[in-house]
Image 1 (cartoon, rainbow, N blue to C red):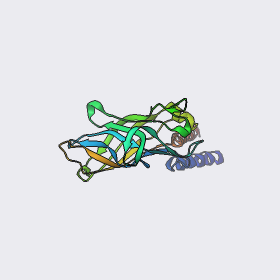
Image 2: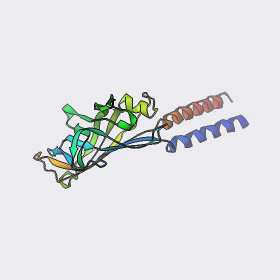
Image 3: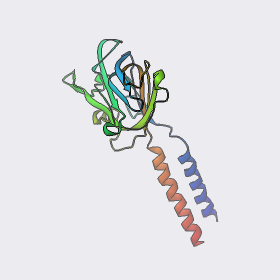
Image 4: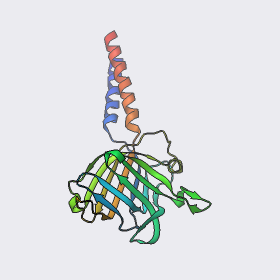
Length: 219
C-alpha cells in the first residue's frame, strides 16, 4: 500500500511539473532596435508580403551562455541612421510561405568572415497563421515555426536538435490598403522560445503513470 501511494505521489508531482511553465526558457527576440522605420509591407486583403525590413537588434535570455542584447548588421536601411541592418523578408501566401532574417551578429561572431559582415540566414521558417483584422490600421500579427542558424545556436551553446516553440510575430506599420500599396514598417518584434523541459516532464509523467497502473493491476 505504501509503495502504491509513493508511486501515485510521484505521478502527481510529474503531472504538476507538466502543467507548470518552464522556468529557464531560452528566448531569442529579434526587433527593429535602433534601425527605425524602413522596408515595405503590402497586403492584398488576404496575404502579407514584407521586403527588406530592417532588424537592428536581437535579445537573448535564458540561454546557457552569451545572454544579452546584440546589434544585427546586414543589408537593410532604416531611418535610424546610415548604418546597414539585418533584413527581414516574408510572404504568407500559400504558394510562397516563408519568413527569413538575414544578417550578422558581430559580437557573437555570427556571419563574420575575417572581421567583415557576410550575412547569413539567422532565422528561417513558415507561417502557420496570421491576423490581418487590423491591417487597415497598420497592425498585424502572425505565428509560425522556424529554425535558427547553426552559428547562432553554437554561440549561445544551444543544441541544434532541441525543439523550438512557435514564434510570435508583431508588427506596426503605416496604414495598409487591400490594393497592395506598400506601407512602411514602423516597428517589428519576432519572439520565439525554446522550451524542451515540458516534453521531458511529459515523458516522465507518462512513464510513472503507466508503472502505477501496471502495479495496480498486479495487486
